[in-house]
Image (cartoon, rainbow, N blue to C red; front, side, top):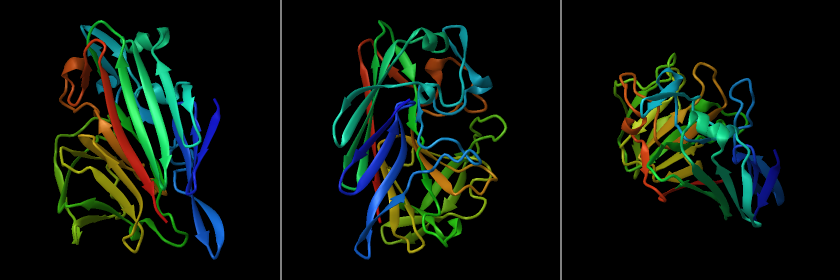
Length: 304
């Protein structure tokens, strides 16, 4: 494992070669003429959750029975796949950007029978970190996978405030429709819920009320939402995430009153409770033909 630091005029970002994980984001704020560094990314306190912003690959969420079937063979698979625990190679590095690489190997093929290269890129641009994922299929047959992001952000951010003072902000949205994860199995329940948002101008706001995540993650699918912000008590955003994913999750550990929340763009999803099929039949599974590549991007803006 090695730590890598990138810095520009507004941000200092720290990465770990284990999991190609972003582990710290500090914004340089000027207060009374003095530059102060404020941490925005969750600290991985094991009392609540011992990660910062893991990459989810080649699965997102839990597979039914912690296993999956492909071409008649059953393979074991842990929640969110295995990439987050692997040592990545630094392929390229500049002052404001870095590119990590992970390749399949004999061990990975035992639980995931595909040959691939996974690329993870980060770039600092002003107050924003731009993230890039690419998957290359090295097989002479189709490859199936899911991929996603899981960054956690401090909430509350300001000393003396509580989570109930904060809110999530969505553009051009009046209502959030979501499903939840069965806390015991990690599988998606097929029961939709709706939350009306408080409309303020072009945005809809969801108050971070106590108990919001008592039933685990909120799964928002096919909503058309491509931007989520976390807002301070004055409704001004301090984190804005933009993505092109077909679904995303909002999560904080159930029942722990944890001082952080995750916004998770997903290109894939945990199994539904009723699912009983092949890997190729999973909802939101990504498919690559021989020699093809998959690319996706998201950005995180950190505001004072």
